[in-house]
Picture 1 (cartoon, rainbow, N blue to C red):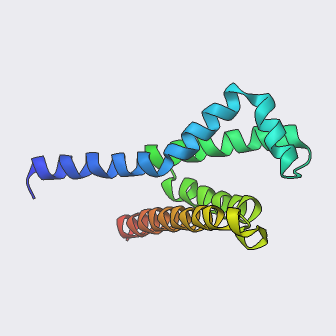
Picture 2: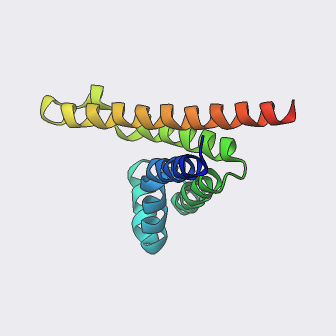
Length: 136
């Protein structure tokens, strides 16, 4: 593999990780910029105390994304985002409880989020595999 191919693949990998984390970076920034709205969102989903959950969500979305992007404990950031996404999906996209007009878009959201969970699990698996190979 030439240096040009190697550097291109590293850039592509980082851009792919950035795209995977984009919704969490945007969500964390938006929640921090409108903390009252973030607290209202936590209240809407019945999370108490809502202020604490809003703050924890911001820290998780931004902190775990930075771990994934920096490569520092990438596996941990990816697992955190996978678990967070899975929990939020089952909380917010309960398509099976919705009437038909809302069911299809909610089902699409549900399964798209499962795809994100799979992507984060793949990132974590790859990073742990790389760490084990380096220590062997």
